[in-house]
Length: 171
Image 1 (cartoon, helix red, strand yellow):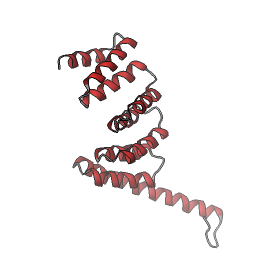
Image 2 (cartoon, helix red, strand yellow; image 1 turned 180 degrees about the vertical axis):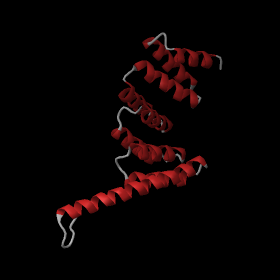
Image 3 (cartoon, rainbow, N blue to C red; image 1 turned 135 degrees about the vertical axis):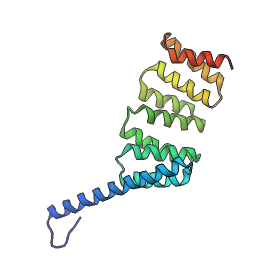
Image 4 (tube, rainbow, N blue to C red; image 1 turned 180 degrees about the horizontal axis):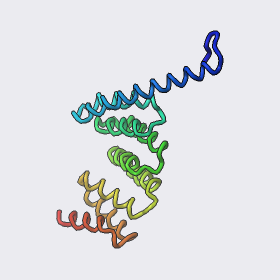
């Protein structure tokens, strides 16, 4: 940034102030987006979260929220794009990985969903349990049972997997 008659120090100060203003504006946009999301107005929520993510692009939570809102609108390309960015910023965030995997399953990219889970979880039993849970919520019970069997083969004492398998077997 060039400042007429100013020094590099002044330019740095101005850049810092602009960054602060952008960050504060992004926080305000997130508050507005949350209100829209709570009212199930996902179009407006996605728009506001996306603007916040543009202003504060290194904030993973803004990208995550935008991705989830786009997913609710079934705009999966935009949702996946934001969720991938969130996960790139916080690679071990399991919630981000689970939500990205959910959108991959929703578009039929099951292999990408499993890959996303493995990259984040590192524990095969948990990966298979999460996939089973995801499939059961989509009423894809055969796939859910296969993943539960895989989870229990890795960890026979996995109580949550056992309970979900018992529940599904009664359906």
